[in-house]
Image (cartoon, rainbow, N blue to C red):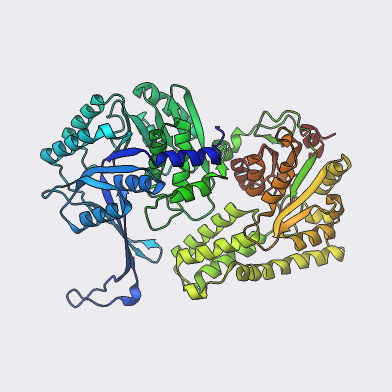
Length: 637
């Protein structure tokens, strides 16, 4: 796994991209989003049927057009479109958008007969996409149009740094006649870089760099897989090796959220994917990746940097809903300066591949941890040490669903209810470990996305947190009451051997820190009730009511800033949430994932194991029951 690029390099690449000139030849499409508001419906006099009144409509460039839009949004100096449109309103709209975006549409040819502008019209009722209407499925490119397009391309190639070949649809420009002509152009300019991104003809354009997804790579190697099927990264690596040997040119293979692979004469390398916690729409992500990678290559950088840039651009655009989005330099810097990566996807999804320390339940993810010299230990609180708040998800999820649906909670159709439920559960899972206030800010965004609640009725994050905390603290207080009455013991409200392990580390002279996404005051009180607050000697940190300040991130920064860079191995973090694991991984500390079953308070939670491995854990343990073996592994004397 490659090390991510730093902010300085990212800024330099974005600055250099400003001077590149890129040509894109392919299937230019238009995405039309029509938002239906049934409150304005009426019965048609002519048909007797109800109408679908469109309250709002949006148009954006798709296919090769989306690639050009992304290139210009990134700041590419010159972007030229080579394609075909019809003599229709959609073609006019495409040209209008290009002119606004600064894309050179002078080589976008209009074919009067036998051609409709490729358009995907997507009606929406609420957040539900209705049957799509497609234009252009019966297009036939004339030889005269093909000749003109090729002639225009040849004339402008000398002034370009890279040429992108897009193929989106079977009824597009890539007829047998056109393909043969374009192949000849590629051979005419052996010193120019061409990149092919084709759904159907990636094996055709010899002499080009290829960009494809894992399903397309499998098909080229003779294996047919379902587009929704997750192909193991090990399998994609074998495809990359075969295809590089076959084509003899570099290639990019994307693997969705798991990242991508690059292959060239230096071998095959994995580029990590991004962990994105917000709601996503992956439509156009491949175009965004291509734009980021191609512009970086055009600026003279290596293939790894190009793939990283592609990942960042796609990471921005997938978070833009109901549009084929683009990414600005500011947005790319925001996501790429301190990215959250996904690690070891294959292992995370398959416990049969687990490797354990001899005679233990301690799973070794990083086999090169050596003999660390631990002087600082950071502990997440809930789920890692304490189970006082066990079941908080069962309180947060219904609260979020009710907040999203409002008055329609009891009457909404079951499929819609289930869709909301699934997205809420995914959001909670992805944001486990961050401060509650940030989760509530995300809730407000979910409410806006679903659109069941009018804008003036949406609360702010502080008000939603108040509602959630009221229900949660009622449960916590009941458990504290039982502890004080002797109905429960500390062992009943903590992970197995967590408190003895804390004591052992304290007496070994290790400085302990307790961090949480819960409010600081509540963390301090709960640690005191459970009797281990003194072990942290005041180093207890939680949320402070400011979404801009993340307690776990800040305490890690504070510790590591006080150390020499070579001494980061002296810090270990224990946590059951991805946030503390990711932040430790970024900063070079040792991360131990606690895949705890909070109900039983011992044993492995397979779902936690998966997300902790993806977050970058070095070791994964179910609890602290094997604390002696764990301490020996961590070289704690």
